[in-house]
Length: 183
Image 1 (cartoon, helix red, strand yellow):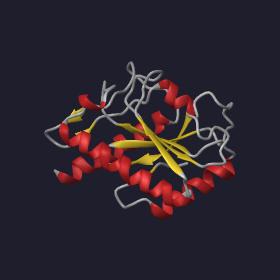
Image 2 (cartoon, rainbow, N blue to C red):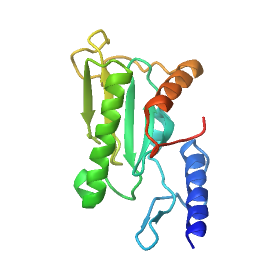
Image 3 (tube, rainbow, N blue to C red):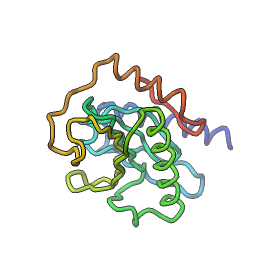
C-alpha cells in the first residue's frame, strides 16, 4: 500500500511540475486537494500571473518555491500547495506552522547565501489572490533601497546562466526536505 501511495505521489509531483511550467491542463484546471486519509495531495495549480512572472525552483513539504523573473532583486515566492486559499488564517493550524517554518528556513538561507542587508517578507495578495509569501533579499545598493521594490524598476529577466547559478547556490544549502524541479 505504501509503495502505491509513493508511486501516486511521484506521478502527481511530475504532473504538477509540468503544469507549473505552463503546460495546458486537461479537464478544466487542476487544483491541489488535500486527501487526509492517505496524506497524498492531488495536483496543484499555480495562479496564471505567478506562472507568467516566476521560474519554478522546487518544493518544500507545503510550498512551491518560485523565483521572480526579475534579476534586479533576489526575489523568492513561497506558494502553499492548497486549493482556494488566499489568506494565512484559511490554512489549518499545521499548515500555518509549516508555512512559517518554510518561510523562516528560506529567509535564513537567503540572508546568508545572498549576503542580504535586510529581508522583506510579506504576504500581500492584492494583485494575485492565491496565497503566496514574498521573501526578498535587499541590499543597501539595490535600486529601490530603502523603499519597497514594487514598481521601482522595470523587471529585468534572468539569463539562463544566472538562473543556473542561483539554482546551484540553493542546491548547496537547502535541506533534504526540499525537492528541486527539473530545469
